[in-house]
Length: 227
Image 1 (cartoon, rainbow, N blue to C red):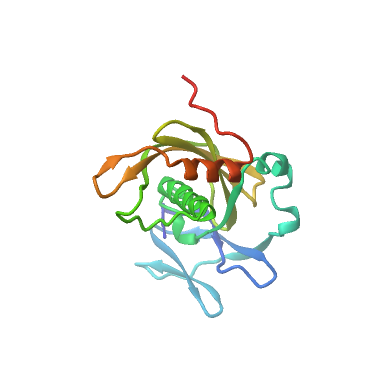
Image 2 (cartoon, rainbow, N blue to C red):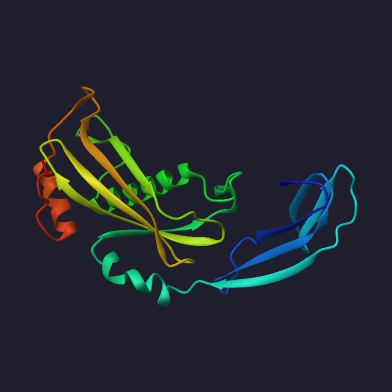
């Protein structure tokens, strides 16, 4: 939905959804003169329907289709070396509904992507994310994020995660979000994970077996945090 000013030439780009079977995204650009009011673009069986309220005047428009090919063979080629240092990489499609009024992916979704990659990492360790009273689990104590590039639909991102340091009762998970469409690094995130006893509601030491599993997955000994 867009609000338009009086007689201002406007151009709107509306990504089509979902991804086609060929792995291509399609986008629609709508341009023309419109009067004050609300301009809606809604999907229908023929493509997209332009609706203008309240005057309901006819809008002259030009439809331009552009395709963004997503192929795994070329996926993040410039970052292959960097990505190889991450043991867990999660591919996520950017959804149309992930965007907000600023017309880019809302900041909150980056943290959700980090959460998804974090859960995938725990799954690779064989760690049950539905924690019980029998053994310590994990809890997120702190996280920070640096936004580097605004993402939009359509796109596919890689959320790559690794453990960078570990102390007695916690470790740091480092995550990077890459855009396939723009072939760039879009965000950097860090989260401090504390080993937590859900029965006593207190932090607990990282079990030696869990430390060993993490180091096996990472392929090296995890250092202590830098003081």
